[in-house]
Length: 418
Ligand SMILES: Cc1cc2nc3c(=O)[nH]c(=O)nc-3n(C[C@H](O)[C@H](O)[C@H](O)COP(=O)(O)OP(=O)(O)OC[C@H]3O[C@@H](n4cnc5c(N)ncnc54)[C@H](O)[C@@H]3O)c2cc1C
Image 1 (spheres, rainbow, N blue to C red):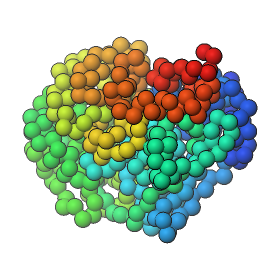
Image 2: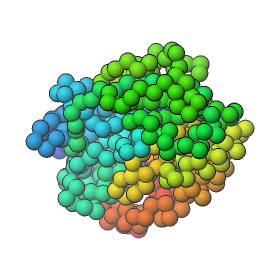
Image 3: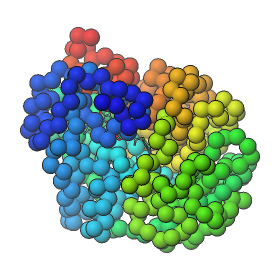
Image 4: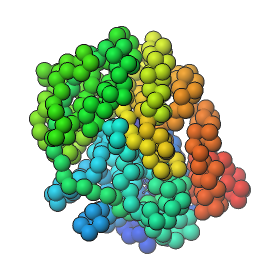
C-alpha cells in the first residue's frame, strides 16, 4: 500500500478494515504494533507501522448534528468532502478548510492540518471532543473539560490513540467570493505583510521566490467583505488561475468573485478533480507571524537552489491554538509551504539548508510533510513537548502506536524493549 503521492510504500505486514469500534478495539488489543491511516495524503512515514494498518472506511460513517451544542459528531474515517456536503444540507459550516477536501478529518486533525486566515485556527481548532482507542483496546472520550489530556491528544500524530470519532464546532453556513490578484511586488509584500494577509478572511500567496513579484494572491472573502481589485500593486486576474502556471484552472474552485458557499470556495481544489499537481512532494514550516518578513527574505536568498526543485510555494497564516503539538501552539503564525517536484533525494538534500535558514525564526515543520527529523530541537519548539512524550510513554509503554519516525522525534519508550 502506497501513500497518495506514491513516494512511499508502507511497511505494514497486514491491513485490516474493522466494521465496528469493538472489532477495531480487539485488533488494537491483540497487535504488537498498529497504526490507523486516513486518506494517506501525508508525504512522510508519520503513519507507518511494521505491524497492522487499520483503515476506518468500513466503520459506520456517522455525521450527526447537535443543534443544542452547535456541534457535529463525525466518525474517524469520514473525509472533509463528505462532511462538508452533509453540513451544508443542514445550513451549517465549519470555520475553515485545507486546500483540498479529500483528506480524512481524523488524519488531518492529528497532523495539525490548516487552511489560511490570520484569525482562523487550524482544522483542529474546531474539535470539542475526541473518541480514542488506547493500546489496551480501551475506548475513551476526551473533551475540552479534560484539560491537558485533551490538549495533548487532538494533534497527537496517532501516538496517543486511534481516533474513532470527533465532535467539531459548527456555525451557520456562509457565502464567500474568491479572487486571484497577480504580481504583488515583493518589496511591498514584505513592508505590509500583516495587512496583506488580513485583507480577506483567507489569503494565500503563491511564489517561487525568484524575481521582484509574488505571482498570485488568492483572496477568499466573506460575503460581507468588500471586493478588492488591487492590493499594494497586485491587480485582478481576468481569468481563473491554477497556482501552477502550466495547469488548468478547471481543477480549482470558482474564482472571479462569483459568490458561492464556504465549502466551494475555501479549498483551492475541487473534490471531483486531482488536487494540486498530483506527482509532487510537500514540506511546510510554520513560524511566528511577526518573523514573516525576515524569514521570507531568508528564503528568497535560496531562490536559485529552490528553483530546480520547486513547483510553487504557498504562504498562509493561522491563529494561535492550545494543542500541545500543534505547529500553531500559542503563536499566531505564518506557514511557508513548498510543493516540490517528485525528486525526493534532491529535496531531502536541500531541506537541511532551508531548515538552517528558518531555525532562527522558530520554524516548526508540518507533521505530515517532508522534513529532516534530526534537524529540530523539539523541546525548544514545543513548550509542552516533554509532557506529550511522558503521556505517550504512559499510555503506550510498549510503543504499539510508534514507528521509526515517531521514535526519532519522541524517543524510544523504555518498556518497548527496542
Ligand atoms: C495535495 C495535498 C494538499 C494538502 N494540502 C494541505 C493544506 O492545505 N494544509 C495542510 O495543513 N496540509 C495539507 N496537506 C497535508 C495533509 O493535510 C496531511 O498530511 C493530513 O494528515 C492528511 O490527512 P490523511 O487523512 O490523509 O492522513 P494520513 O496521511 O492517512 O495520516 C496522517 C497521520 O494521522 C494518523 N491518523 C490517521 N487517521 C487516524 C486515526 N483515525 N486515528 C489516529 N491517527 C490517525 C496517521 O497514523 C498518521 O500519523 C496536503 C496534502 C496533499 C497530498
